[in-house]
Length: 418
Image (cartoon, rainbow, N blue to C red; front, side, top):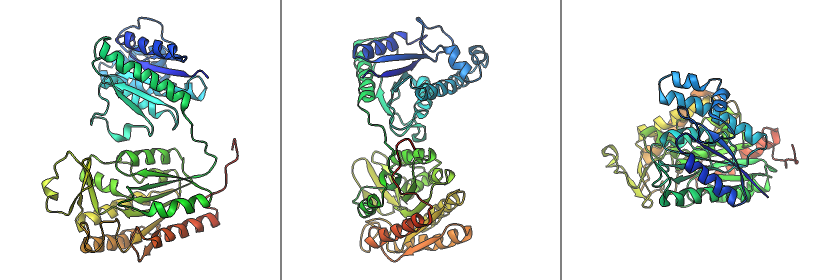
């Protein structure tokens, strides 16, 4: 079956490159819809969606974009229009995937277009700043793909043809092969880390599936939490088991392994029932290439691998994290239940192990009691066990079963078309 790919770019300056990608897609049996997001110049050909169409979709005009005298403001006008048109084209069945091409300016716009499409719709960005730390994780859609536009800043050559042809083939192949989420079972979103650190997912997955749920576990190392929050914002989950708050600590201390400022807020805003626990809320994760800041040099330290290394939070910092979590949960529009394992919050938080800090754990437990009691709206269950013990997972399931029995959560199979 043929698939139609939306191609987005500035056709006044990058017509050759964009046309090369379109020709490559057509040569492989695909079809294209082209969208021009340029402002100052004119496209060499006739894109299917003109720059005037894009500006009008943003309730503006090209003349207004030029008149503002600021390239950032002008491109944000085009970004609003392009993202809205991208969503409309997909909703109308006119496209199956998107690919965009650009430098930093075009990438900024393309990120908005990608976020306008739901999970399962292939979204590719060919960019001079792919993988760059200038791109914050909260601008990325959960299943975005980025390809470095190598050697192509100005004009076609054999180097950039290699990148562009791979990108064109990748987006068409993805559009032909993708299996979009069926949504035939209610989905539970769960946060965790690798099973060497947090093991509750191994206890919970099968019992949750037996109860009728599909289980999606997100690796809470920045990108995973961002994807989790994006899907929660879209109302994708029937309930969430947000049992790992490492990214909240990373956000607090400024680590790059953050999931963004909206962590622990989107499920609540969407009214999705939440069971929350402070898994790994005793550690800060740093990128392996980072030097441990001097403020943390005397803390317990664990080198997980060459990509991630961790240091410990002080008792006072753990209190601060729990207060932050309580404030975020206080705004929830749906039910919330907080679970506090009294025996430790990750595998290395055991007596005699590298991250065990009895004073820090005591401070965390005490702050949970203080902060959650102050809210008065978030019930707390204390479990006399470690977070990786089966007793903790059993307690989580007990809360979930109560919500199922009360009709708070629906665990029935979703009929087709429902």
